[in-house]
Image (tube, rainbow, N blue to C red):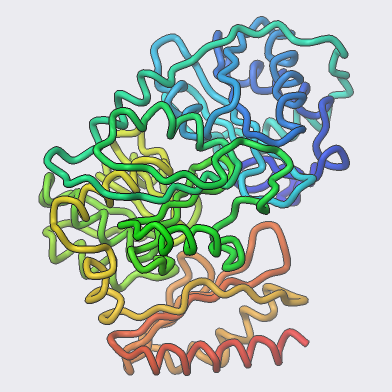
Length: 455
């Protein structure tokens, strides 16, 4: 099959598109059939987020599976990690989550795993599923599908309870579900927590009255910041729509870059397994490598993206993997990403160490100041990357192309520039060793050059 996708909703790691222009019930019905034919499951767990189009698409998926003799277990409204959890259970041979996560209104998508929560991505079956869907003209029946209602939430709550640090002092924690799917699981977990949860935007609502839950956007952080400050909370947590990512705010209401959480979690987990392997992405690296090595661990770089991280974690039997984009992966969770485990671990660290989150991170932020990810729309991703490489590459002491272009300089700074898989956008990250001014100057210089080349 050619490298270019024949169906625009099929991306590198999952399926996402506009409903119904790129993703409709017929396409999803065919996907269910193709999934059944390729992987030969007997039972598949299906979950959905809160979007209005999710329930009809889940129904079409169940029709496709059922038409090939596969039992569909309907988890209902849940998070992606609950589908991952279900796919790890005895007798369940796979899982599919219907979600558009943080994408705008009008979009939806699907995330697929096999039994054991092994991801299905471009290199592990997604391209073949795309070809089968493209070759089919089957139509989804109009009547409701035969599904079996199922729930593994109680067992998942038991698993999450084991992530709560014993002896942690109770904290006041603002939790912002963003009117997405996180609220029901939070409610089920709450009676087992030592902490007091202050809930905002807690009611699942596919109209998203407070905006699409995407805390990476600065404008979507304001309500969490306000609530942390108003309630004098110790911590703030906000999630995207399917809560496979959580975003943290310190006791001052300041947003915490996911980069520094990777190092914090790696250090904490290595305390229980000295010498463990930690996987990280290439975008921002120095702080993570420094903390991992100081804790006696082994830092291993992987290409960005959940499929690459999970594959490398399995190959290395890694304890933990983290991406600066707030995806956190755990060996004890079948190498999958979770938006619940990270904040439980961080709350435990704050509660046990007796220091606010800002103090736990202050020295790390000062030692390795970072720009955070900056997006620039360009005409030609490849041409702009090549121009940056020609301009900065000869000055670098190290050039790495694990993912996009990474350049390291003798003056104590580095950058990573990579293209989006789905749009004409370049993503820039810059960091330095202890010199925030240099980091800002180099960031400005790179952005000015990119803007000039991209005109």
